[in-house]
Image (tube, rainbow, N blue to C red; front, side, top):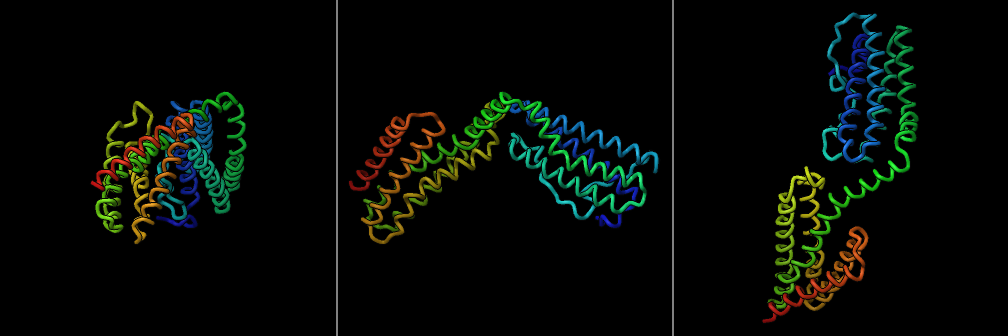
Length: 318
């Protein structure tokens, strides 16, 4: 890698051209990734990509008049000082807020680069163009804002916000809720069966941890294998599986941890209280995100949890 201070004027211009070309393609990638779910925002990024392409043309015209047709291959990764970025534009599905923040960072870094590049060149025309581009990059936030005002009308923004909400439900809330319900309810029977069969808090704790971790692994793989998200829009399988598996484990561990208390009856009372809180939390999540009436959600969840809880106690006491 070369230090920026060691670059020649020719290499600085070549790097500038490479950066504009890469930024244009990144914006185009954002536009393609957002087009299905967020068409208005995709159009904004199309406009930004066209703007970067115009910058590349301006820079290359200047380069050609000074150094000819041959353009050396020099990129960000060839120069020290540039921060390596994750290839966000290759990820599916794209998160709209994350994309906008990423674009803001790109424009800020581009402005700094052009100002520093202008300080290193002795040619007046090159310095003038680099400073002009720095000003353009610093004003891109205003350009993006104007584009959003023109393209992202209130109705378009409302539609995209609703799409974002639906994606959040599909990718995080639904698998998380399924995991939390399974972990909170399915582990009740083995936990309380072990508790009333042994009256040993430590052995009960081990059974509860084994049930919670086992259920988390099982639910995680089951959710990930349910579909690849290409048709349903539910997102990457590994993401849904991780959310579901982690929430399943959390649901079981919550009422397992009280059995670290040495006294059996104290631990059991605390565990029962934790179970009650878990069932209320599940009911609220269903009410808040799944549009289920709270009383209906509470009745369904509490009834199921109570039956499993009683089954565990009866089996453990027999």
